[in-house]
Image 1 (cartoon, rainbow, N blue to C red):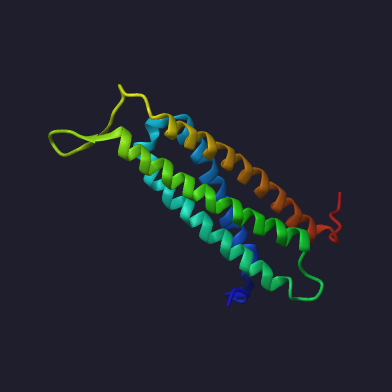
Image 2: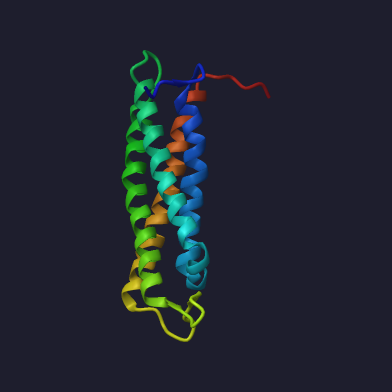
Length: 165
């Protein structure tokens, strides 16, 4: 089921989605953790991007597992790194959703016209600050692991190829 799409191996297609969505999610979490005023406007979109990053990472891991069954293909270290990335991306998505939901609960109110607005004169609760800090740590871990997995995959793919100078 996860082996190919349109006659091409699915894994190389999915890793591009992982890089785009996981990195966008991680950088977005850092931005919204540092700039709380942006959460009201961009938080919902970031939650969606985070969910897509989880789905694309899972599809990349599953499609990569199919490739490891082909003799001569696959790298155990790369596969383990991809699984670890999935383990890191899921909590990042949960922290993103939690940060957004709590920000909406504590920092967003409704005006007399029924429009939502962010309370700017109030300080955010300490628990929200802690969640934002943990989200930053998770995002940094995801960024680092994405780089490690990408490098090991490129190395496994291209190590035998001789590139002319």
